[in-house]
Image: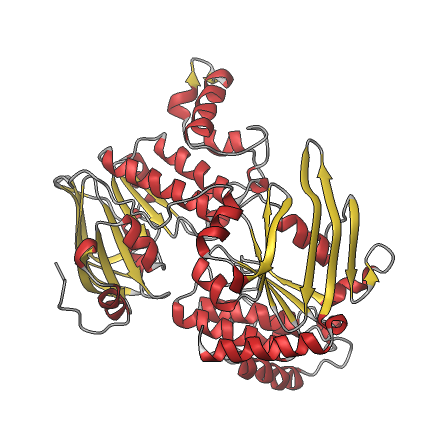
Length: 521
């Protein structure tokens, strides 16, 4: 334990000894929530204390989202009791005002300014009415930007600021609620680099020092043990474990979440040797990247590492045809690849799975069957159009083959957990038998068990001869899965490394743009 964390822990312990009554702010007693055919929560107890970070852990579908909805007042329990500052939410719904929630997905207004986003809605933050003072809004916004370390100006358009600043802006917006005492953060670091994670953690510690409580939802073990004080584990809608983070090991926490041991430390690199060169990229330039060259071999997982904004996703989107190339060439199996045409890329066997699956990967208002069936017309077409029986059989095969958990294929896909959505996207993609499959942050916001399942899927695809590219912000993930890793910094390739023989420090140095010579291929 670091000296800083030890000092903070001692400080909080002394505060708690002085007054347990003051520290306990939110209590959940025997909470249950039923939906038709599903028990989402059953007999859940929870205690949140001021000045401490409480880890809410569990796999996708464990009941965390349902619990959060009840705590924030967007859903009602079927049974049980919730007390916030001693007030029962059943008789005093205004108690919910002291609980703020920051979702994993960005929910900002991209074409409005930073200041406008910060204080929306204006009537809640005291900036509404007939006498709207924009100068006062900008001055007050700067105070929050300084406090949260947001590297943007009040008048900047949100779409033009960094992802990490947008994430911090969401947290800052929650804090403009003067009644807020409990802040719930759902995967706040899923798209952030280590440097940016440190900025979020500084903000969290500032909240704790101001006698607030933070509920932290994350699937990243290193972050849980760095920032967490207490923990509660949900599994299948029930509480299965709770206690102090200092008293549990990582393997025990994973076992509590999944119900069994998971060898997440194992590597998932293909066991077969990579074959001939499948794709050649030469001197490719486009939006946010310049002069990128690399080869992809048949049957390998090729990793791409870099900071947010390094240009990794833009390279892949340009190869696929989402973005326009300004120069350079791509060949696949020796033939020129058509750039600037995503439809032809799909037709010729290349698929790109975006990190923003809710915006680019699924049709949220359609069912699981419709989301899968929309891409497999050649498997379901009959003489008079789509054969419903063929479609059902094909979709069932994908659901069973990829272990998608659902009560039925007619269930709306947006109601599935993130991991099951991702497996549906992968299964749909593989039904078209692609030659090249690009995964962009495939495990973002996904629990550990589903991560290992996706890792195994990538490994099996590569061993079946598919060329797989993995773009990831997690060095550990790349080391688990990729045989080679290409690093990028500010739009340029800074190194190419053999995973098995390269130290993590070398990879990190290349990601930050330092010259990388040792261990390079």
